[in-house]
Amino acid sequence: MQQPPNSDQSPHFRPPKRNGSFTYVLIFALILTVAYYIFNPQMGANDPQATEIPISQLSAQYQEGKFSEILVKNNRIYATTKEDKKVFAIRPEGERLTDLGLNKADNPTPVIAVSNESSAFWTNVISNWLPIIIFIALIIFMAKQLGKGANSAFSFGKSQARVYAKDGKKKTTFKDVAGMEESKDELVEVVDFLKNPKKYTKMGAKIPRGVMLIGAPGTGKTLLARAVAGEANVPFFSISGSEFVEMFVGVGASRVRDLFQKAKRNAPCIIFIDEIDAVGRQRGFGMGGGHDEREQTLNQILTEMDGFENETNVIVIAATNRPDILDAALTRPGRFDRRVIIDMPNLQERLAILEVHSRNKKLEKKADLEKIAQQTPGFSGADLENLLNEAAILSAKNNRPSILQEDLEHSIEKIGLGPEKKSRRLSDEEKKITAYHEVGHALVGKLLPGCDPVHKVSIISRGMALGVTWFLPETDRHLRSVSKFKDEICSLLGGYVSEKIFFKEVTTGASSDLKRASDIARKMVTEYGMSESLGPIIFGESGGNHFLGADLGGSKNYSEAVAAKIDSEVSKIIDEGKNRTIELIEKNKTLMTKIAEALLEKEVLDKKEFDAFFEKKTEKPSK
Image 1 (cartoon, rainbow, N blue to C red):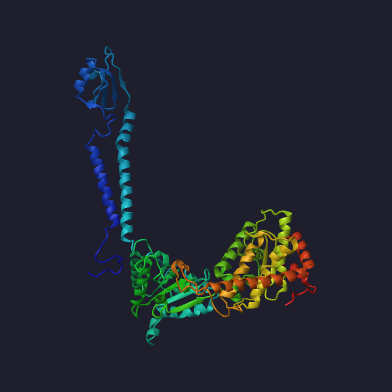
Image 2: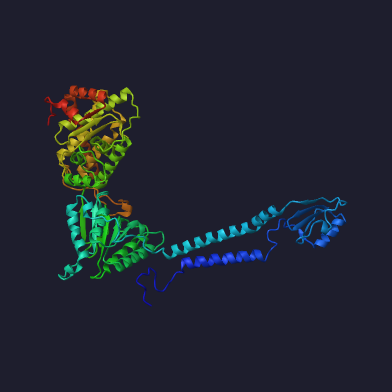
């Protein structure tokens, strides 16, 4: 039997229809409930302990005075004997109590009637129909749960991919993706192949089956994949790598098979797997050996990509920010054999991204996006989108008709440095220490050529920091030299040295600076080969064990003697930087005091105000 083209199940198995089963169960339950109450009129008796006797017997015993009390409830007459035994009799319809020989004046047994016509009606409704309603509601609830359970059981191994149809209302195209011109050029061939496959097959060309998008978080990998689908006008299957993996072995592989079957039926189309490193990590280092769920899922992906026929117009696009941990079989030719690198945007690309995301924003005419682009080196596309959103929120909060330039600049500081915490009150002594600490960073950075220009100095608390010195590069940098690293270390030690010179002791405020300086010095020695004594050698490799994304249990590729030399070299670099910083601050103590006093007065010094203190020639450190 051939499987229908629109069926998602195996041809050998057909689950029951959910809607029909539910209707039959509901009707059957309703019929059973009504019939049960019709043929059991005694259901709902008020006193299950009472024994039923004929009405004639109850009347005779009443006349003999054997009862202590008689209670009449609707069509039932309950009697309690003097021995506390309870009996009842059915009252014939239309018969009065006196006709039955009850309620006589000469009989001392009290007869109490507790119902009338209206109360009997409501009592009948409540006692008879309320249980029916509750029972039906319970049946409906159980039937729904049964239907959900059956449906989920049948679809447990089905793909959870979200499908964006080619005729969808909201399409993402390359016009919505600013920057990344080189990356888009790499994918133009994919779009053209999906539109005109015969153009390439005539020449014997094969389009790459898989495209790997590699870039830092927030650089627009998912957006670019959707733009490819929008430009090609084909269905787009989107799924995350983690959605394949379940606690049951084999489910991930089943979902992979189902996803690729759906894609083949909807060809030409695109499958997009986001965060593929969740299932595509190197095999052989998991806790489950070679049979764990993740590895089976990866094996199935590899098999399905090998199983594509040449005429099947299905292209798999995957995204990751950790290409170093991917399995080699995943990136070999024939699978993900095209790698598209998405870098952080440069100045022109940042400007283009800001223009795209400002289309639906009310910017004032004086707003200078180019200046904002210059102030945001290292920002990703997601960061820039968030910047404009924060500026819009700030503008709406202040009831402004449009977004001002100051709103944009304030958002840069909020994202890059953290929100201001003006509620954090510092004592006069703490404020003074913070001022000299920040001026120490700024002064050393200003006087050393390898440091970026000082953009702003503030003693207003931001995030976890009591004060902030903001260095802003004039151009995008891709390479760093030994001299630049050493100058940056001196700038980081500027706060520590300032506290020691001006207050004769150091505080905990320098801890984060010392950590950053130590990290730079250690990387210079172990990763960049910038140590003269140890030479151009990289230290710290662990043999490629990427279990759980970390180098757990890996062995060092150097001895303990070399480890001692590394520590000695790191200490040497830090000591040299400290001595240079001490010399620089000692020679400019007067200037530093002036800047610190101005900072204490204003709390914030911008670039223009800070540079004004250096119009006169300042003494340079000796080399």
